[in-house]
Length: 328
Ligand code: NAD
Ligand code: UDP
Image (tube, rainbow, N blue to C red; front, side, top):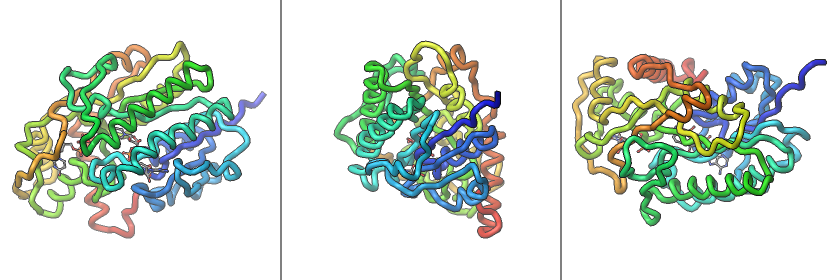
């Protein structure tokens, strides 16, 4: 008997990670519905996918009642990626960011319950706040300032995790939660304000490189293809509820070291200017990925230099031929 085609909803599918996820799902033979309010996502990112008869784009906000008529009668999997991820973007409308995580996740969990679909929440390393434990394992409960400017995102995601595990505990939905650490790659927006996109575009344009603070704060950067692989492995994981799972690249470097790598790859002569460090900016971040390795057999495969070269090439093409080099 022919196996049923998997039917998947990706909320936030027009964003950076979501567009790569939709593309991979389609390549693996799934039918994909993408629900997105285009707050930070871009329709042009989906231009190629929209030529695929197995792909449907629905413009809508996950906070609102979901557009049930535009969705199929059967959904097997629901990925919730809907939420601006870059600090300037999620802080632009903090109330909406908080509600996206709380109401949006509730709406999507209820949809998963109705369809008996498996639900995956993309949570974040930000649930660890400015961590006092290093590296961060899933057992660490975090150090978040609940009244600070990042709280709309951090606390929103923490609440979304709570709701997700409440649905699990009460047997209402089968759930997975991934805590994503900083991820980069082609299709990031040049104007999203994240460090990788800022530094690469500044280097390519010969502009000053903006380093916030002294650049001694650390991050661990994961290439987008590795992240999508991790998300899909967790969704497919069979076994007892694994709890939240960190997915990220444990290679940690300072912001200054990242800048030096980008300058070397681009051959740029841009100079560094130091700007004020944003409030509550985490000082150190590195995932402990033991759980992902043991449960999912997952580990990142793309070295930072390789991923940065691909990302630089993509931004360079975008600048040289803005019409031709649209995201593919
Ligand atoms: P992104 O901003 O590129 O994508 C988010 C997408 O969600 C966009 O297309 C946006 O338009 C959409 N969206 C936002 N609010 C919505 C709403 N209320 N209703 C419908 N759509 C909405 O961000 P990304 O980097 O692709 O991140 C995807 C997910 O992964 C987010 O949930 C984010 O919190 C999480 N995450 C990402 C990173 C990272 O480094 N990229 C790190 C940690 C967590
Ligand atoms: N950052 C920086 N220059 C920039 C943008 C960001 O030095 O132009 C710093 C930022 O203060 C933070 C790190 O780079 O310490 C990562 O920032 P990003 O916004 O990419 O991610 P997040 O802070 O959410 O980890």
